[in-house]
Length: 484
Ligand code: NAD
Image 1 (cartoon, rainbow, N blue to C red):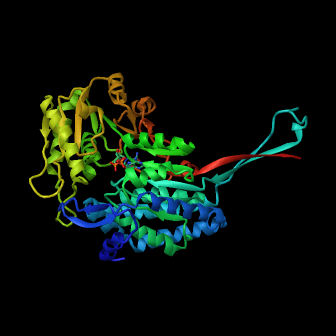
Image 2 (cartoon, rainbow, N blue to C red):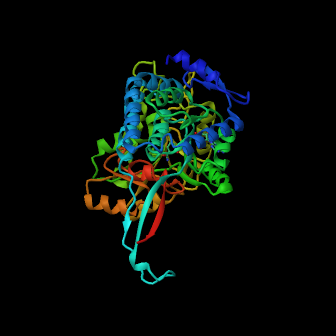
Image 3 (cartoon, rainbow, N blue to C red):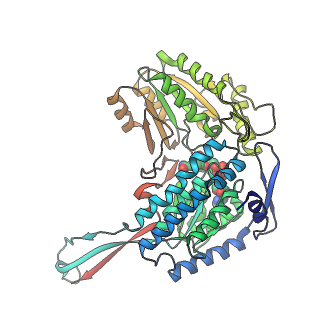
């Protein structure tokens, strides 16, 4: 599909008539627009998904056949990689190099989960009890089956449109589920290409149903729908809580990948050059719009000044700009709304006396660009210290010993990720035990693999994506008993 076809096609999608503009965050100009699909279109999509599940066109296929189709999706994604990367880059403002790096990883989700299709077995059990109501327990056989959740709702945010879509679609398809899929209203473009690829690869009609609309309309209708048996959601903790409330109607199952306020501990024995560079990139990459961004850095007091200075220097050397601007490594924030939110945190902090080591302002140009910002002299009660900002803003505080570092790191309602930089291996692994986070990285940051489970502790989520857990999240376990 050419860019123009995508921009035209999205205008033709059915809906309520309420127009949603798609804005280029680099130029602040409208790229295209579409109509909010609204509840009626959601209901139709769920009905199609349900019919496809009941007919068995997908989950009823031999697992190896589903796997072949998933490999074809990955191959087609590779063929259309430039297009997908170009759309995500245009839609989010991320540098082309970054989008080009991410899209092949997204295709791999389908290859990785294609491998799982043929391995989703239950277990056989020895029955231990004797007697029982029938008086004949001794000669019984029990086993479990893994069965797909029929129709699932997949809802995700704007920060990595192709990535977020594939992270959910690939395991849902491997499990045999039919789905309704809602990308963020800010970034629906690449999903249209994915929709075409999925159909071309041979996924039968009705198995994957794309919905383009707002969260409070389309998203809420998916979450409340009685025929949607599970919602897999990535987004903010605030909306995650709304989803849990809305799911109560049919007690649908919910998987949540939510926000973070991830700590990074830097010790004086660390490889400081590496720690400084990675800790800076770990917050400023993608303008801080990554769930695992390390937005709270804690530094052992003896090297505190050196690390603050180093991170500020990296921040000052990062070139901001749009994907077409030569040399740019950091793009803009996604929207005016996000810009206002991020600047609100910074301005409030300034009033409350934080020290702005560098940044603290938007760029004097078109586009939602905020200078990478380093804040010190931060009070732990401040809103900017407690809440997820999802922008290029980091606070840096000193600590003296392990106990203080752990207490500072765990003093948050979030628990998505944590990082330790030290050459003392015993300390690193002891801290990995004590840190309250679903992912702990030791002497590395921004790492990911399709095979390694990812999920949040505390208010950062429920359940896991990636790995075996990631596909089992789309399946339920049935126990079967047989009298022999
Ligand atoms: P958001 O919660 O506002 O929106 C996410 C998605 O939910 C969008 O598609 C939106 O339309 C939809 N939505 C909004 N209200 C809804 C409702 N009432 N019912 C159903 N759906 C609704 O999040 P955002 O601002 O788009 O994204 C940023 C957030 O996502 C950050 O908090 C970030 O940490 C989080 N995130 C988490 C992960 C992770 O894996 N843990 C990954 C990426 C982003």
